[in-house]
Length: 483
Image (cartoon, rainbow, N blue to C red; front, side, top):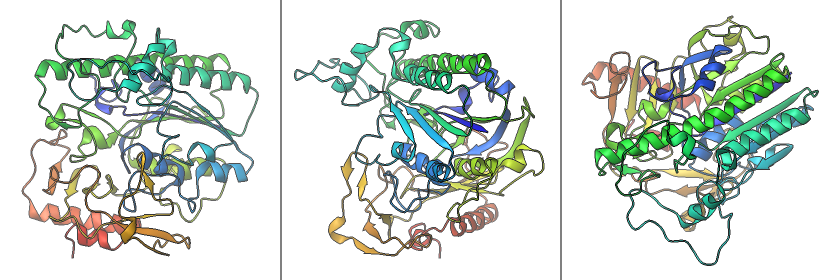
């Protein structure tokens, strides 16, 4: 058997016609793949942002209750390593530029082989002593390094995510007669900066003539409406360009007749706000459905259930046990996700009643598919600790080491870890000071919080149940004001 995961970063579910018939964004190849797939309607975030989500996928455990952004830990039991020990070859091709940085260590190295495509975001790739000038005026973020990197992008084939798909196509072609492998194709697009070749920009006519705006501010919206609309169109162009190259991968699957005996999964790590709820970006606001409710489509090895839909509540921590189950490999005891094989084969209708999700040291959130509940931390967000064996985070070493303890603090490993005090969340907590309850069947966009103490208590009970199942550190309950 063969397994392929395509992970498109920041792929907004509500912009896909598979999930939203009224979308204005063109993704014909994702539609084409959905016709071959079982489409899941209740797939939710686990941990976010980028590296926590990937650790969820590779370990089958939630990252966000123990620590924030960081590497694969020495005690982690990972999907590629378990496959390797069972003679299943693994390869990753990716343009995710955070892997070679501090805080991204160990992910690619879990695979037998890997191919890293350069040039995304602030990847220190194109080297010039004299730095280019940035636009005189711009909204959001701008980067001299990205300006250097993009000098190499002449046509869509030159952009990193298209080159990622091209590399995957080459790998599949060279290994067309192989079996027993796991291929992970990880396209950074449509992650910001939203940048696509002119062919795709023209699909979304734009008369905007204001300040440069290609990279979300990660803040409450202060830009004029026409700038936000411009940002949304750039996102759409980037997504449609990515979709085109995803289609080229599907063409090779067709041409080489690789669909039989292949488990093929398309999903994402999280969404991205483009003005919804008065924000752009992610990480610092409540985890609204635009961020948490994810696309998830699965082509089954025997081609069954194509075009069908499932209401099962699923998360990315379910990918590892599902893939191991298909290969007939025992699922490690450390895994907290569930195999979806019986769901796929229509032998079972659900694997969980609720799911918790979030980012570290912010709200802890729960959904049962009918309601969502965002549980906010108490005013001082304390006590709060990060647990890790490697004290690095996004592009830096972790603060607070002078007050760290070391010991066997995690119940699922005997490996000693640092217990590091954390003063606030990823981006502070002042935007998430209130706990919120939503009826997402009648208020999917989460615009009208409910004042219903009885239902809040019901959802709080579900949240506590799932925190216990996930081995949440004991101080998490105190931090959230749960007695």
